[in-house]
Length: 86
Image (cartoon, rainbow, N blue to C red; front, side):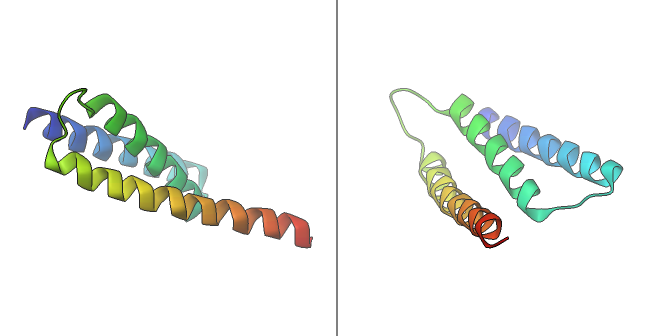
């Protein structure tokens, strides 16, 4: 249970840091926010992952990560198409 609370706390702090830097730069971009959120989630899940057992919440987090990677791929494809069309 302590790992979950630490993970949520770390994620909230990470998202607050991202939001504060975006607001200070006066440049709020949801794509950049999503990519940085995904990086933070991947790091936290890697640090939380146990070697020999898989708690149920980790299985659900892996589904969220898979969906995030699919969305990341869509963002990359969209950006490449924007570059090719200009």
